[in-house]
Length: 348
Ligand SMILES: NC(=O)c1ccc[n+]([C@@H]2O[C@H](COP(=O)([O-])OP(=O)(O)OC[C@H]3O[C@@H](n4cnc5c(N)ncnc54)[C@H](O)[C@@H]3O)[C@@H](O)[C@H]2O)c1
Ligand SMILES: *[C@@H]1O[C@H](CO)[C@@H](O)[C@H](O)[C@H]1NC(C)=O
Image (tube, rainbow, N blue to C red):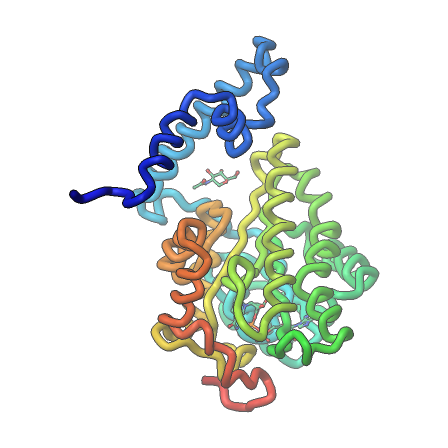
């Protein structure tokens, strides 16, 4: 005779006997709402807040589904005439992003340690008819950030959109990373964001208007080989923005928005040699266009290309070993094997 659980009937009976026991109840509470505060929820006003909160969850969910089908030009906010700050504007994605903002009628403040590249970006912006304000600033030095910010306010006015874009990568296995290099990656990729936000947020609060943008990475949402320091710093940048968004929300700051951008590899030279088997690297111009559109639509988290939103959801649903296998399937596992970064001149 076929048996569903050969030799295990006693266990099955055991499970049925288990249903309804105190132990099961305890187990359910342990994995679900062990910490529900009944005494607080029995207070009517606290209960009302909770219920309206949950209704708002559903409302915004529906609103977002509806907005998804509304064309960008109908839902996007007007950003013409705004003053945008882009860090790391002397090259790559920073330059492309500055140009896209200029095309939308913004004036742009450009910060970089690469003065020559930064001046080139400024010239390109002026050619498009935008005002450009280039400054040599090392964003890792907090005093330099604060004094440059004061100068910007004098020279150009109040910045209403800040793009924390400057970033660096080492591309080594954890045991090959020197301590100094690890600290530097954190200095540029996340700590600098604190100095820049602290410099510009006060005026945004005063004006009750502003937008803080962080260029993180897909490496800020999932791991990658030879990028332990980089991933950790990018996760930190995502964490900073996640917490800041909630902090602003808690203060009722509806008009100060945050956007986190998480792109795949981009052809800027920073990740020269890095590649995966099935996804091709992105063009900085395309990424910059997505950044500006996301700002205009007040998007809070944007994965580029958008297809990666699906993989990101899967990461939560999949068992860990399946997710590792997915890295093997797509070539993510070997993505950094041929990495040379800026050591190679070739921009592929
Ligand atoms: N290139 C990619 O594949 C890729 C993918 C995902 C995310 N990103 C992120 O996008 C951002 C831009 O990357 P990119 O590819 O344009 O890099 P890039 O190297 O081409 O440009 C970065 C710019 O930042 C500047 N910079 C570095 N340290 C600085 C400092 N301390 N102060 C001021 N400026 C400084 C550099 O001089 C350079 O001009 C980075 O945050 C990077 O982590 C890049
Ligand atoms: C974006 O935010 C601005 C300012 O808070 C608001 O006026 C605009 O309607 C918002 N747009 C979208 C698409 O959410």
